[in-house]
Amino acid sequence: DIQLVPDFGRLWVDTLFETFLDRTGALGELDRRAGDGDFGTNVSSALRRARQSIDVAPPSDYSGWLTAISRGFLGTGGTSGPLFGMFFRDIARCAATGEPTLGEFSSGLTAGLATVQRYGKAQVGHKTMVDALAPAAGTLESAVAAGAAPGTALEKTARAAVGGARGTIELIAKRGRASYVGDVARGVLDPGAAAAAMLLQAAALAQAG
Ligand code: ADP
Ligand code: MG
Ligand code: MG
Image 1: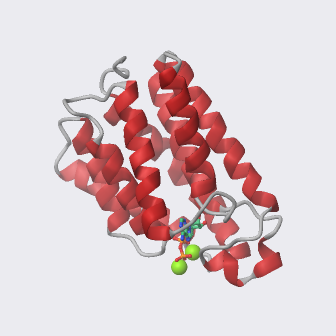
Image 2: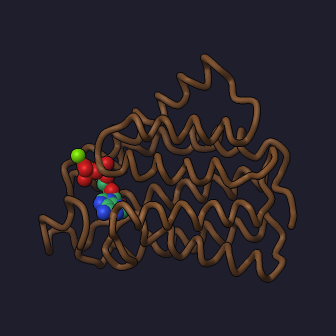
């Protein structure tokens, strides 16, 4: 089982800050079209809260970096705040010692998906973040089983997440606020799925360096 790139936790979190904060407006716009419009501010306030805690007390290891992100989301409103918060808590816990191996990271992603589904009760096809996370977790498990290199594996994982997120465009929502608007949500990319794909793209970028 192969170690991820040294300092993967810090690199991933830095990449999240770089790639997410200027796209929260677009994510909020998606939530305005099919929800209540707060998704962008929910995500940006979660990340800002995480950055503040990191500035006050810089994390010293992988678990510390990802715990800061988890706590940022857990302190945020909306449905996505607690779900992403618990997702990142599982991701933070995946490394037995120091930095995760690819296999440990895969286990963390699978555990995070299971937690999101346990609390949110969403299945694939319900037009939620699960539509991006489930194919990603499955793809990464297969890549690990096939002995893929971490860079290749995380690249495939991100592509699976993006494909899953794009697939939400044509769906009618069965969970969350978008389920209240029925057919109006058809044609709108699910913001939570888009965000989940973006965070896995950030992981692939962090690994690629
Ligand atoms: P709210 O709808 O409470 O305003 P947010 O705007 O923060 O919540 O988050 C909306 C996103 O949360 C959706 O785009 C969807 O991906 C995700 N979501 C909503 N309900 C669920 C659920 N039951 N399970 C998983 N994800 C969900
Ligand atoms: Mg919302
Ligand atoms: Mg809301």
